[in-house]
Image 1 (tube, rainbow over the protein chains, first blue to last red):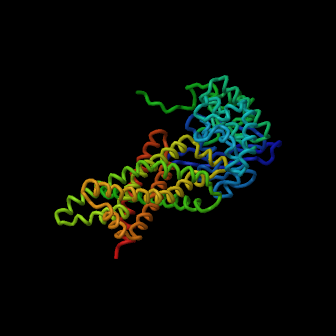
Image 2: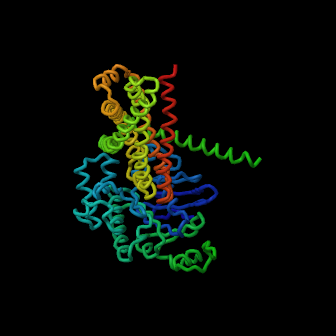
Image 3: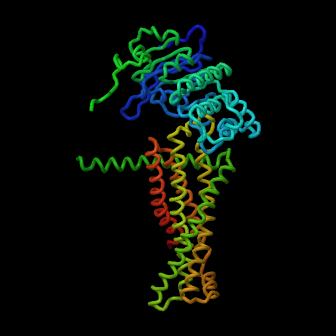
Length: 264
Length: 257
């Protein structure tokens, strides 16, 4: 569906014919998607359309039923053990609710991947963690707090600092602005753009917040009924000519996408 | 035959769980012995599983020892066999009651806590986050708990044995009028190494079962608060049943002629 462009001849991530079902419930039904190096791609789609499943398949947290996922030309599907861990080391992820470890203070959360994953010295890792926290606008006092004491926006920022702490080549954002007020949403979006550019990383985000989508992405792909039904540059999204996309970005209940609502 | 269908389905479901549990246990055990090993985490878990369980296990042990002396007295008095009380107390406590009761108490306290903690981490995506931070949750969460369970339960049971025997001593000496010196010498003369060792082997096995059930049910929990609740219940119930099952088989291994 998406051909490699002239600027990005070899995609960072190449997904072909990805299928995943839970029992009889087909979630992904042949997803094709290319993400170029340094590109920020955003997948939109309704709740339960399989956006999170797509991310988890790429990370190897879920095993797809069939299809292929190439990361830097290396097949990820079917990898396990240390080979999979090697590929995973290229990724950072900001989870929907930040998924901070509530047993550890903020700075240890940010330094976690460095200390546990890469075996870095704790003092050195703390200095780096404080640096990353500063990059997302959080000071040293916050570093000593427990995640339970943080507000939603601060948790997202800590999650972002953790995701970028090990300078990953690819960063995933799972609904980065969901549950935040519009202003904090904008703050997070700006931080995301700034961090991704700063690292020169490739980004794949999923969201259904269209304001956020326009701010953080170069290209948008729409996932519907387990397939990518449209993909194109973010600036073209308002005249996509695709009725599904139009309905989605206008947030209308009238259109080709019919929600399963049973009248009481 | 629609009558046979549910039986078959239940049996297949049982096999599925048994298989999944075996795979989980093997994966967990290999991570216990393969580096990196986190001594800090193991230490924290040993404190959690062993030290903080002391009051509960100690109280259980002392009252069990006390009631054992009292009960056997009322029974044995009919045959004028009261002098056998120290022997009954030491053998029952070291072989059976110490490890089984300590195991069950720890299953309630620790198994539930482990399942709730890991289950919450699962439903809030913290386990997925561990994977994305190049940390294997088996290594970081499961292995330290299993090792701590294997190592601390025998120590806990040894302490419970001593407290239990002391409970029997208290009742025998202060309520039933035994001579303290005779009671102690009877106890020491009668106890055999095998009694204590079999109890400690059981304790180690129970420690493994309790932590394994906690980790397994927590790791596979899904669907928010309710899922974590179910995982916690399942962890405690399955650990308790497995403790009683394994207790029989280990006893047979040690004492069947």
